[in-house]
Length: 151
Image (cartoon, rainbow, N blue to C red; front, side, top):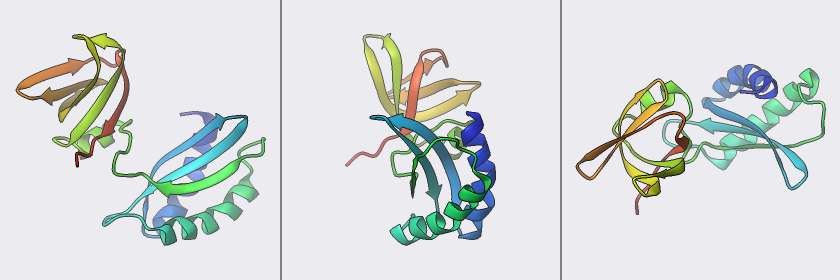
């Protein structure tokens, strides 16, 4: 994490939890020339627009006072989502056995996307069960892992 996301995480965690939610992730990115600070939250039973609004109203003055970001930015609070990205070891532990999509930087066995069940996670290596085959992908090959929802 960057210094900015670390600082915002530290500032937001208690405030988010006081609203009955958990802090899933903090993202600070530049898109089309504009900086965005995004706080992603989660809650048992799902996150509502009211949860996002309440947390935004609580966090806005905290961020204004602490001023962890020198540039102007757009502040957004949103749900981590059904197809949330898995980043930390605790994320993988929480969703062991769930359906995931793994994207790789380069083709492996002729493809760059693997959809299957999360079989294991060990120090960055993700093992996904696709059909009857376990495919282990090293941390250097994995670009992104997210939950996958089939309809």
